[in-house]
Length: 95
Image 1 (cartoon, helix red, strand yellow):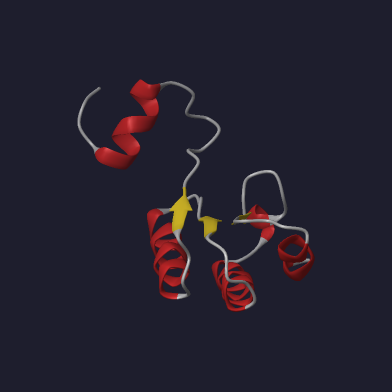
Image 2 (cartoon, helix red, strand yellow):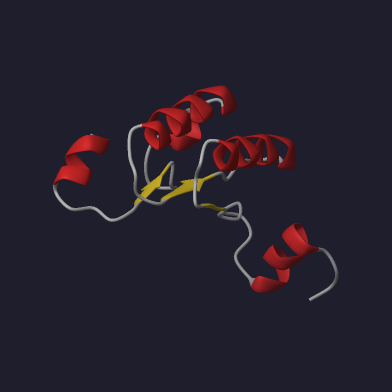
């Protein structure tokens, strides 16, 4: 699928986002997907690393960057809906 997107002119890819099957993968399975995609393309790759815990999020983020990803994206848990709930989770402090 990656090769088809590149052949059709994609200038970058976003993988393991919120709307697919990424949440059903283990951290190790996500890392294998990341390695496979980054190895098989020469365009920027942004990787979704959202997880319920910071340990898994950090592990997948580190692996993505080591594999050559351009960056990562994180979505807050769906139960957090307002900036005042979301920001302290990621950057601390009271907002």
